[in-house]
Length: 292
Image 1 (cartoon, helix red, strand yellow):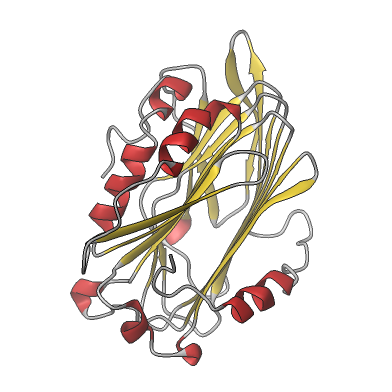
Image 2 (cartoon, helix red, strand yellow):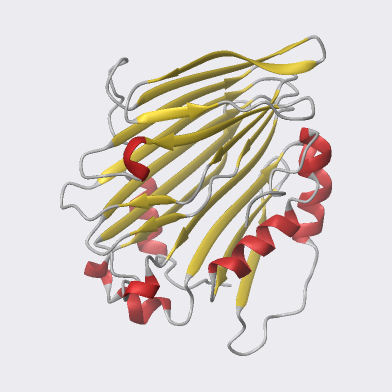
């Protein structure tokens, strides 16, 4: 099943071949680093470093996992902002990365970008579930997510976006959106997924039709096995002009990747929340209890 806005086979090949941006020098504005380790039966944050405009919030929470919420000064990303976060989850540790609210991308010809590089050790779990990206009219945004998993590490990842500030008449009115997700397990490729939405390839409003939100959900590893099986189970085909469409595919080495399109943000986030209901048990608390 092809979801709206999905690039053609040729476009996907071109995106896959495209080299990621050059590595940034340590210490640049917007750089951050997180290290999670396990001590006394629970996960602790061994290192948390953030350079403006990046902010890392580390609230206390119930359960054995450690939680961090990523934010930026100014309530969003402005032209020229470049956020780069390196995350290390040590063996047996469990970490949650979230956001306080949606990532707003402001209008600018300079564009803004984010990068996440994560390494998850043996038996570790990384849950990266940020709120959707909201690109304002005239904005340009690029993100790269690169996750390296040990053989028995686990990952839950959500990459979501909306059509923009539709209430202000800015529906699919941004200049460019590009997202690239790469997951490796034991040094071998498990997933390479790319989304490119650019009006140069055709009017976005026409291509996206009735849909106002997109999401890619990745679950992989032994701690997500039940969720992956449920997501891959056969389901009735969507009806004509369905308000939500989802398509699941198995991942090499186990797991699933699900692509979702919905007529509203609430429908997409409700699907994601339902699919990830098991996280409360893994983290010791429900990451969605006070959101959405």
